[in-house]
Length: 148
Image 1 (tube, rainbow, N blue to C red):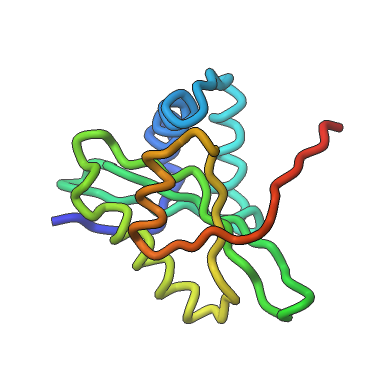
Image 2: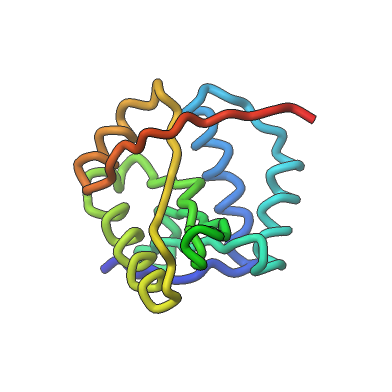
């Protein structure tokens, strides 16, 4: 049976290792492990940055996602960004993502979140299909970034 729960500091090593695999699989990026380790620990220590939830089977983490919060002045409500979604290969197509999102949706409803958003690399067609199949809609926004 799969259990969904908020992540704790004790989950950091698994989250870091899954984030490294996620970056390689989804964007063919090799991340700096020490930097990711520091970033995961920073988020787990500071709820203002966001939070992770994990999916477990027999006390073994098999999937994760991270939520970061954007404040919407137009709606006077938060928007939750779904990020760092990773399901271990042997657990894909077994509704783990669906269970993670269901958990997040119920929390978002309780906390009066306006809606959930996510972004995906345009070449990650596997993820695009998963998101579309599970009811996510493509919005008319473009995503920009400026290096500082």
